[in-house]
Every structure is written in C-alpha cells, then in structure tokens.
Image (tube, rainbow, N blue to C red):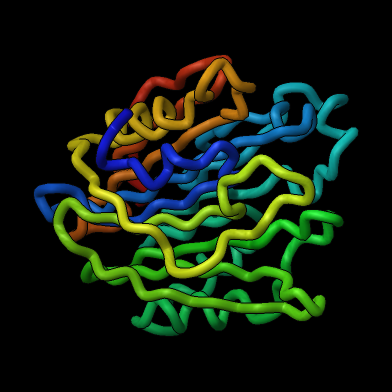
Length: 252
C-alpha cells in the first residue's frame, strides 16, 4: 500500500476518482481520473486518448447498452490551454469556459450551473469535476442530491503545493445499498511519483481489492502538464484488460 495514497486505499468502492495536485518538483500539474464500477455495464469500458481528450469507450457495446450509455460514455479529461476533468459530459462545458475567468472556482461555477446530479436512482451519483488553469490555479467540485431531493453544489479551490494533491470521489467508499455520496472537503494526498506512468500505476495498485474481494477497477488515466505550457503533456492510461503505451503529446 502506498502511504501517500492512504485516503484512497481505505475506500472499498470509491466510484469515480479525481486527483489534482503538483508533482514533487513543482514543475508539473498532475491530474488523475480513475473509474471503478460494480455493474457489468460500468465494467464494460476503457479509457482512450483521442486527440487532446481522454474518453470513456465501450469494450462491449451490447453489455454497455444494458446500463445507461448516456452516463457511461463521456470525455473524462480534456487538455487545451488548461485541463478539464469530470465523470460526465460536463467536461466539455468546463473546457469551453476556460477563457471566461482566471479563477478556477468561477470557471466551474459558470460551466456547471445547468448540471445536476445523475438521475440513476437510488444512488443519484454525484457529478464530480475539476480544472487546472495557468499559474498553478486549480479547483474541484461536487454536485450531489440533498436529503430533501434538492441539489447541493460545492466548490473547492485547490492550493497547488509541491508534492501535494487533493482528491474527490463520487462515493464515500463503502460498498453498500444505496451508495452514499462523498461528503466534506476533498481529501489530502501526497504525490510522490515523478511521472504520469508511475502515478497511474500507484493509483491502480491502491485500488486493488482487499481480502480477495471483487475487483471493481476499470481504468486509470494520469496527465502531467508542464506549468509553463498547459498544452504540452505526458500521459499514461491503464485499462483493466490492456495497457496503453505512454506518448508525449502536444495539442498545437
């Protein structure tokens, strides 16, 4: 178990995971998106880089159709003048608002104002989102269902400190029925890994099932961007059934 990822390792079933932080050198912003799934349709996915965007894509379209494809297929991480990340189609809206404000919390507020929690009763999965802008500015957000059925919107500025990260998940970590939404402030993590590959592998390993339990892992993607040029990035993707080779990318 990686001590630096202890807050994640304690979770039996986190759902979807977003981690945002700064590497040990202070020169690269790190963004991680991880998928765990309990249903066959959620498991029937992988992460794929297409252009400057990492998408969830089906591994078995017939199995995926038995779930809710509209909630399962989406752009997870998009890189263009900044980084947008989320567990749904709201990623595209976040990217479109990058130029509306230099404040990452305001970018998320504007981009997510029309979005709600997911309509997947009885869990009502929260929408979790994040963004990284120039000059080491970042934020996280969660939109979830209140006890009275109302929509709760929470936004958190992420202080970008060398070797530190913050994490938000869709669920509290207990494998229960119905699933309980993540609560409170994003959790603190240490980011000890020096490359996107090592970071993705560390997260994938921490999500390994405990005590011979079910393996809920689906995929993990990590992007490291150079702070002086958020269009230049390194990435690594791990899918449950395959591993994609790392490449250097440039969106320009």
